Image 1 (cartoon, one colour):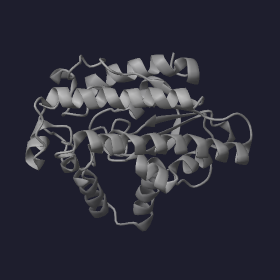
Image 2: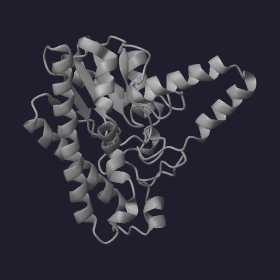
Image 3: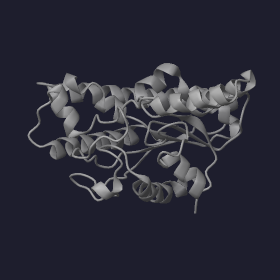
Length: 283
């Protein structure tokens, strides 16, 4: 979650540029980036399952810094996704950019399900705004998240039906598992849910673990509410997979908000089991 600095990506690109200066090589990199992260691809890629997500789905362009949910589901459970995933992506950005339409265009008439990994960055961004008004800011952000989720589903289904016909898409969203605010940040810029970031921006909370756990529970409850109001919106609960509450165990965490490889393998196992009856993929 939270915006991931692209230091690693820039290093890779710099290395590749110096190794091969051919224009078509750089064009291949650009094409891959646009297709993988924004579903802007050269033509339709028929697929039954799409995915739109943040760093829980993909930290950095599929680069194996850590195997997040998207590569776990692709490599271990035979999912063939089309989608738009990149660390730092917010739900607000998805709606503003119309990524739901681009994913549907890419997948085509075969698209039946879109998996969502979104909302965490919308909650965690600009923590200083919470100072002195935690309840007010959280209520405002949750209201915006709810409105954006409903807009995503309603406009996405209307677009799919008008263009391809058939049944509405089923939108599956997972709630996140509990952060561990006491973990040190490993990925630059990913420390939004860390106590060190709270202290640095002046956000004083009596108990960092209780604060993050309460936020996480409230977000999951919000997803339940949306699922009751939108028939094609399906919520799956991943809480307590990594040992919480009130916070996930350090041996399963990369930093305060991201799991490590072992942690994501546990999350992917649970997610795959929960969504199998809907997607009929993976087991």
